[in-house]
Length: 334
Ligand code: SAH
Image (cartoon, rainbow, N blue to C red):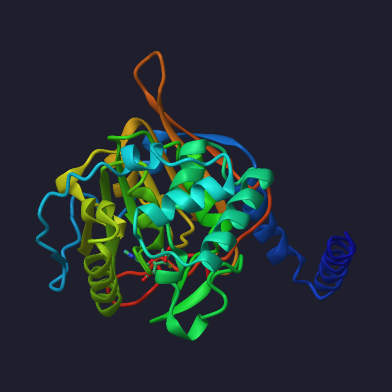
């Protein structure tokens, strides 16, 4: 509370000072943008997909663009997750041991505690999402230099300027999507692979795109190494490329999860989202985003609208930027 008060006061002071210096107009132009990003809004679909010169049909188009030739994994992660007891920690741990996945007692305890906290905070709403979270060993996706912080509720660097997202934000984005088994889910920004590992217990159709080649290769190897003990990872289709253009070959998607930040919703992703589908993305200027849920809805007259909602209701988060192939940012905001 004290911190909030301080921030409110200091913003007022800054505005007064800036106004006095004649910069009030600039800040005034900045603020409505932030405020409007917070509120719930209905956006006309045509307006959102029109007028973009930043690519439509192009499916990535990069020379380095590549897809790992995977066998079509058919392992039923959601069914496996449903067979897991989640009422008592002791029963859950006994079941995990029986499955021979090698999770340590200490990490299981930490994971259980974190899941419980997220249920209470509302960041894990459905039992399916709690199950997927409990089945996903974050310790394998956090890098060696962050040992000891595997279950700290914070983002951590994974090299190449990328991060593994905070576990609570991962939980919140996942639970917001309300994924049903069999739905096609596209993730933009594979990063460490942790998010898609969770998705593989919610549906058998997971697609993920990463733009940084060495990171893409590292994560692909990790999935391959883990597949014997974690067979649901075999359904994760991964691709090296620019996720701004989505993955036309497998479109349309029921759900799209964007894990890099941008100041607008990429039109190609909107087009590849099914009507009735949901996208979750960190929307906002560099350094400050709001997690938006975007629902693509059909009206009675057949027109399509987008209903968007800030899932944290005004609390901002910080994601690494959505980059293009030359490393530049897709955001036009300075
Ligand atoms: N989901 C990841 C989060 C990684 S951070 C995890 O849980 O670990 C965001 C990721 O988005 C980074 O790995 C970054 O390289 C990637 N990224 C940025 N721009 C991208 C783009 N245009 N296409 C695909 N991935 C992109």
